[in-house]
Image 1 (tube, rainbow, N blue to C red):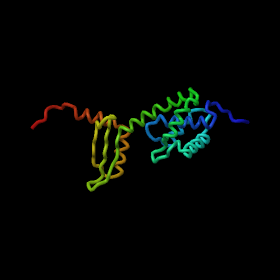
Image 2: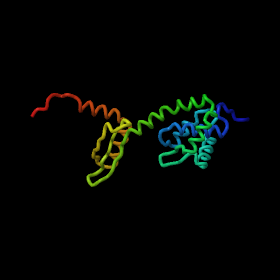
Image 3: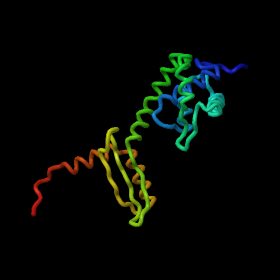
Image 4: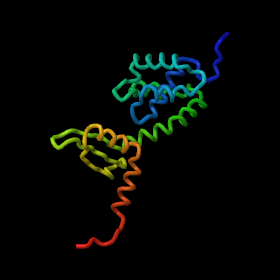
Amino acid sequence: MEEQNFGFIREPMQVKLLILFVLRRLPAAIGEDALAELVLIDGGINYFDYRQCLMELIDTRQIAVTEEGYTVTPNGDRNAAALEEDIPFSVRQKAALALAPTVAEMRRMEMLTAAHSSGENGVTVHLAISDGVGSIFDLHILAADEKQAGIIERNFKKNAESFYHRFIEELSADKGAVKS
């Protein structure tokens, strides 16, 4: 019995174009699992076909692999720009909708700094928020150790905006005059 194919994408070239379509719209590198999730939106693509096409795009230097993940190269960008109309409109639309939350989170993460370094005084954690133009919040704190520094960084990345707002509210609260 032949396998049913319910999607619009059936040819390897279309799978490759869809992979490039997704990568062209991301502001930063993306990990393998997240990329697969964004590309496997069409019922006609299976993981093995996707994986083979991804490897071919890497081999032909249309996709670069970095420590952070996958990015489109200038060559891949040019090729995709010229040919992405070959992807059915409904699939492009579905991909764009699937991309929106990932793009928003990537842009958010670009605005955050959460890192630590060890020095003679201990482990210093640097937390910052940028608005894309300049820094709006910049804090250095001393952590007890590397483990605590990692926890602080993770918590800040999850809730940076909330921490910022609570920090500003607390510092801006008029709690009466300071007695001398």
